[in-house]
Length: 155
Image (cartoon, rainbow, N blue to C red; front, side, top):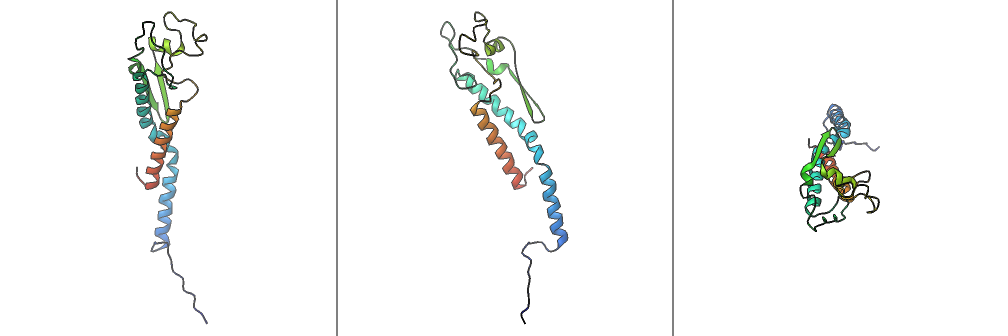
């Protein structure tokens, strides 16, 4: 007659501690929907830095060079300072006012209605409907980092 010997390899001394660990994991799992809210401030900071970098290098939000001024000088050198970014939960809102907004839509002084002739918007500083590739990369990187923190059990 052979005897059956069973051993527990779960690492828990009792079912109670195993159920407690499972309850803890389920509670953490319920916090997954909060990840975008937790990531939003960091995303906003990195997107603002991207806007500032684009303006400093005289590129629009999609990576195309700004048209120089009629005198050949750099344009919109203070545009990044004019972007107001607000975070509300997991939502980001970008607002642009003043002459920079006029450049955004292609109707700055002397160019009213000229955006169609120039092949679209003149000097976009913030995106319209299409999310730029670098912004997608920023979103992906930050969210992957937040997910990795979550899996490690970090707050």
